[in-house]
Image 1 (cartoon, rainbow, N blue to C red):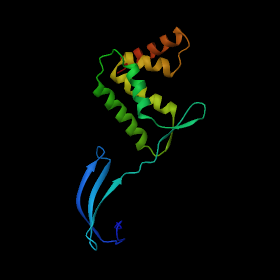
Image 2: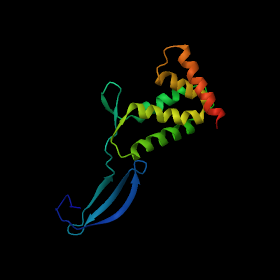
Image 3: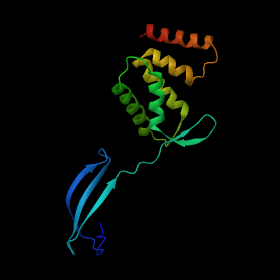
Image 4: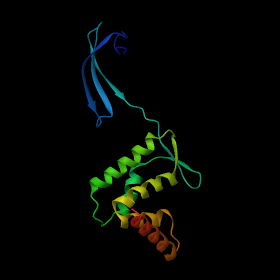
Length: 154
């Protein structure tokens, strides 16, 4: 690390601590030539995850949007905020751990549905009705029938 005061390459770390909820490291350093102290920050640079929408538009992944959709589906259901946070974390982790930097919005929707079906069936149906754009009661009943069949085969 170059000293910002004299340009020397030799510095020593006096103190390190995690900041920003563990996503960055703050280091206090001292130049071995001029003895002046300075602070540096190291932060993991994550490449953004891009969501490809149905119409081909691309936008950066939004954890907030994911959480909002799940919260709406779980509204007035016996699902805790901790369970929702865990669900959001697991889905995001799965997306980011994949090898692709672009993900289809369909894959996100399917991941949410796969998680919700095990968490709360009513929340699953609510999410599915919006995600799959049910046009009529018949499609709603078909989804319910599929859910009952899956449940009985477990």
